[in-house]
Length: 188
Image (cartoon, rainbow, N blue to C red; front, side):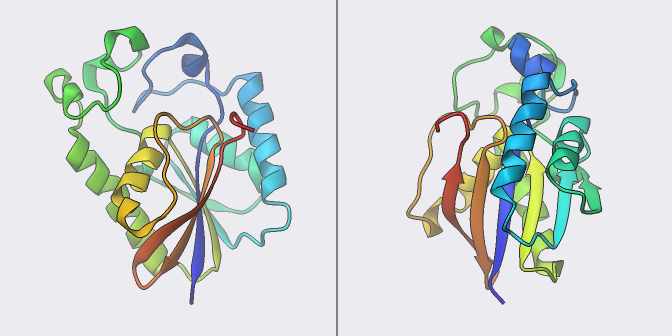
């Protein structure tokens, strides 16, 4: 069976608004973030979602709950990059993308272990999944790293940051993902 994965970033949070690093720490959705999630729900109106997952961060589960009434699982492997001591600090203190292993010196995750964690988690979930259409709400860097992991199978490319509530549509078949569509409400 060919399945479809909809991997998306959470809505805007207070820390996003304030320009602060937010990996494993959490902050609430702003009113704009809630509006973004409700707008993203319209994308799924005619898609028969069978199951849903979010990271264990409240910003992702709150986003998911504004999109669908489906019961869902919170999964630790879908958590954002661990920024270590840089959590909650202002964005201007970090280098421009790509971050590589910048956060390791601050007690955070290296890029390669982070990428492998996200890719392995999503692959494992999809291999066990019985539904045709699956929603996973995660984080910006998680989505970017997953795009990078499967760039070799996709004709579609994306560079830079992904907007809040950006939806990535992947085809999944034979343990392989292929990026089909990027729906970024901030670019429309």
